[in-house]
Length: 178
Image (cartoon, rainbow, N blue to C red; front, side):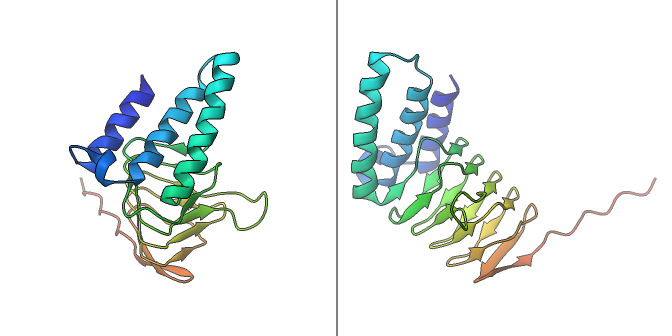
């Protein structure tokens, strides 16, 4: 089952024997994965009761950890949240595999009902980074602490500043001559 694989990848990124005792951010990731599984259940009284329990747990974990990770967001396997607190992810956001999020990160829209970011695989977000609007962050990108990203980033690039500017764009590999 895909959800189980995603959860196993999440746990592997934490690299701890008992992450639930030492990393509060894993609570939000676990509840996110459970919520996604809950959405796959057939409609009925059981799903309705479990959904009420989910929302209660979501609000408790969101309040206690400061991580708002709604089940409507699409997040690939291997999510790692370092230093929980003040993390808000828009429900329509798409995040690729093996991404790292640090405290204070916001991923969302720039105005009400506006488009939201799409993050590629292996994206690393520094503390208090803000990724806003209908932008595409490529694979293997790094976003520095306190950066405000408002424009697309190519694969493998690094962005810093407010507003963020790309400081490192990988050079294209020369094609071999035949």
